[in-house]
Amino acid sequence: MAGHIPGAYYACLHRDLSAPLQRYGGRHPMPTAHCPLPTAHCPLPTATQFQAFALNLGINSDTPVIVYGDNRLSFATRAWFLFFFFGHPSISVLNGDLKAWLSARKALSTRPPVPSGRGNFSAKPQKNLLVDYQGVKENLGKAPWQLVDARLCRASGAHRPDCRAYTHCHQPALAKCDG
Image 1: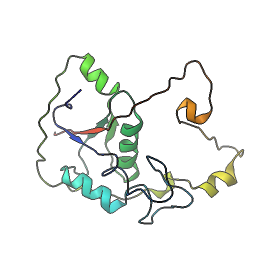
Image 2: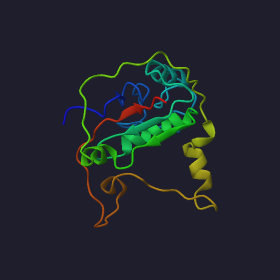
Image 3: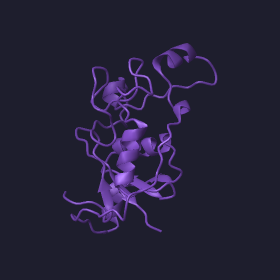
């Protein structure tokens, strides 16, 4: 399906929501013990990279930002996390994703949005939101810690009848709310 919600900017997973893939890290990398923040080799984008991305979209520190994907929330969740991690105060996820937009019989656009100007968002990493391998290892089984495996059922080894295996992925889009 071609198009996006009118006014939405495309966020490329590999260019905008990740640092360049390094030796350590998966297909959609997150920090690892081999790549702790704030090194430049970390799979998460640096504050400078993410700030440049947001500024080019015209996002200000007070701009409400809504992220969405289609069918799966993993990439939209990553975009949400990055805005939250870098200190944006007003970030939301479109409930129901693009499917909800289409179910409401809303139109899609193929025209690229035009930023209203350069934004003023300043990315400030909240490093307390990340835990490295050593932190997990030292705290496993200790209250109040609880680890949650949010991977696909097949990857996590879960064998539940209510788990569905997804075979495709899509990129997120960002909607910048004016006003």
